[in-house]
Image (cartoon, rainbow, N blue to C red; front, side, top):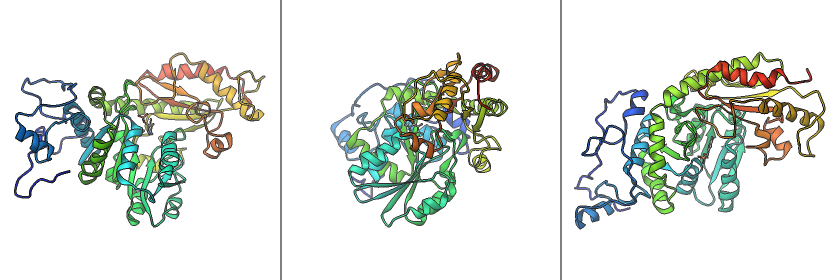
Length: 433
Ligand SMILES: *Cc1c(COP(=O)(O)O)cnc(C)c1O
């Protein structure tokens, strides 16, 4: 990209006039771009692929990057920029680039920052497609990844090689809600000259700001809580200006993992209610987790907001005192004759757990049976046969995901209606105590 000549100041796009100390709730509804000449109150949706220039000289200045302006929607669009500025403000980073999906944000990060021969250290508990992307796709191009325990800080340190360039973490993890120590990982990464990227999908900046704990880059699947209503796919990466508007912008221009302005507008409006949704859904999740712990048919509950969670104190410190909105639990094995279909490789004990989990899921009427998360509707899923269905049973068991596990992404329904929905299956379950 051409540089601005030193004696000329680069013409920048205007910023909204907001108080420097505006809080997250205020930024969620106010940060963006100044309105157009028409003075619209709600942010406008600019469905246009390109932008006109007043004259040829201005077009040349904009293409030479001497003047910041909207040129072509693959890399600049006002609606998309409003979403990017708002999310950057919430995360507390200098810059943000929106992408077509959460996965394409990770794709852009690795394509833009790493090269063949580089090495990544990544938690083994990250989103399944992230593991595939790193291992299979980038492995093919000579970028190697070592997968380590989410919670064992020493394992991260021991995995470092002279060519380690990136640490990648996601906290809390799915579906076990294991929490990793962001501060400790940042220190280890920086000690070897690597960057720390954190997938902040489960907490969002409403609960957790990884940059304040030393992380360099933040990955988002906007598909989840940022939209918050399960409507569109979206993603984003937030970080320092030098990285985001440097190599990552170059990657976006060249590779085009662009977020559509329409989807950007949906997620932009979703951000306006992010803080209150996260607070309300986390509060519902805590009540549900506490209730589940009391149920005789429930074996174990995984929720960072419970004192029984192994990293409870760390989670409360990192997540603004909130556990988040995802609760997982395991049920006790079914005691009767097994009737649900199960793969032949499963032993009798595993089949009994699967039958019990299916019984509870199939007795819900409110919860949606789907593997997505981050919706105002409560979503319920059986990880072993859906999101983690392509793993072998021993791999799943090594990761702590049994056939008896159920994950609930808690929404905004009344808590009593949610407990009643789960009580239908839990109280009618014929289980082995
Ligand atoms: C869903 C998800 C992704 C991928 O996001 P998409 O928008 O589906 O591409 C990445 N990380 C986490 C933690 C997710 O839950």
